[in-house]
Length: 156
Image 1 (tube, one colour):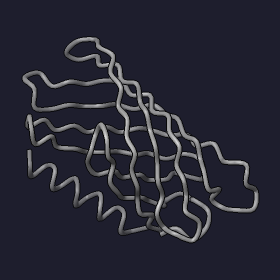
Image 2 (cartoon, one colour):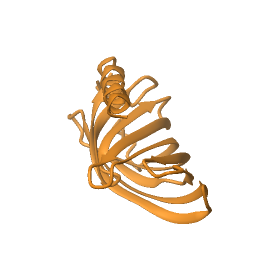
Image 3 (cartoon, helix red, strand yellow):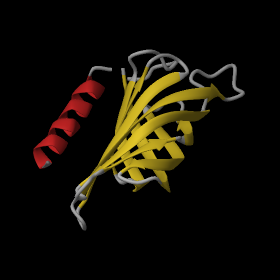
């Protein structure tokens, strides 16, 4: 399992190293950073255009030995600024999955993330806040909530 995590981290960094942010967010821009909360771990985001992106996060809980990963497809709404690209704030929402490993059966669920991403103009760093209701479907149907704050470095 640790080898798989190391592979994911290296792949995320390699993906991020192929892309920086100079102006507008465009297809191929990637972000790599840290997510803190539930989960706490590595966060990666790949933009498919100015308003759509895929993000993923992976985390390892050292206390109970559980590993978790989630992936979401996101749609972004631009802020009111017409003079700044990207605008300083973008609200996003999406749909995705969450997988928890380390229990006997594992757990798979549907995520519906809602968040806010802030672009520090003139800087490649972004800050994001997110809440995501989760409906676990395997091994049983249960409701849960993920929440986090994080930052990422934009590559281009």
